[in-house]
Image (cartoon, rainbow, N blue to C red; front, top):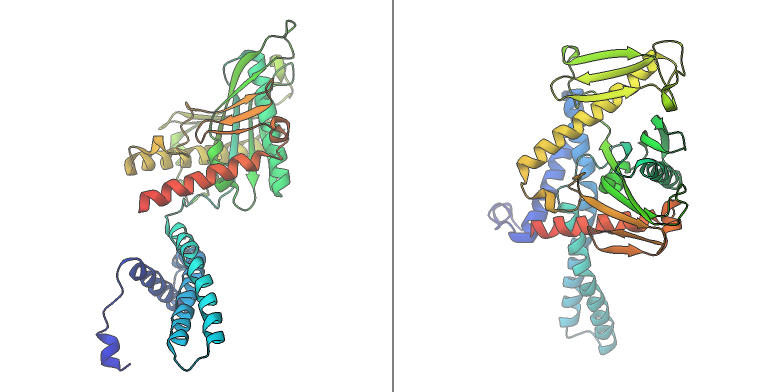
Length: 370
């Protein structure tokens, strides 16, 4: 093809045109990164991330284009009258197999092109709190917290307990952990919401089934550059740490309570004996909550109907029921029921619920892009 022909070639439109735009963008980024000496550290980080984010979709596009080229070559081979019947038959079978692969390759490309949640690759702050149900709710909150700890261990993630508020009977009024590892937030973000339990409490002598609840919040861990916190917006109080029942567990004022005045968000931290360490942990939790607050405000502006979608994180929503007498766990958002409650609570079968939620979210977002 001549240079003039190449310049006047009609660009591809529709699906293929969109793919060509992605490849063109990848090439532009590649050239810009080759001249990295001219970029500031921030520009280099932004461009490197975009280039990395395009890697998966580019691999799918190249595989799809390769399959299409092979089909074209095979069609030419079949049309060649000089080929014998055996060669033609082999070419037809190979072409049929490639054509059967195309829809799957196209689906993979479309899914990879769906805008991703920029927080998916982040670590997470997990917060579990007892809801309605008194002591039984606190015991259930502790069970949930341990479930996530076991699940994190099975994934190879680090699970750091940051704060626990215990009850006399071993329950948790509140428990907070920092979970670090690849894809933590992407896997756990759909756990935010109200978790309901139906079972006979340990304190129940008549064997009656009680219903109680705990709330779970999963927040993407925020970096300092994500959220600007002015010292003038903070009120910091120090006090003596206390244990269950209010008894003092420390003789110094090492506990820290930080109030973010513009939003009213309050974070307390008292697990460490050092006031400095408690303050650092409290700031990490505060930063995550403020980042989550910003994300929610932005989501509300972008889509007023987001609450109807899986992953809205609406914590007033009852998302899951754990029925111990019947041995089942039901996620109400996708209508999934597993009759393996012991394995779910052990963290072993929790991935079956999480994987189903991720798949449903992907399907919803893919449909919205059509």
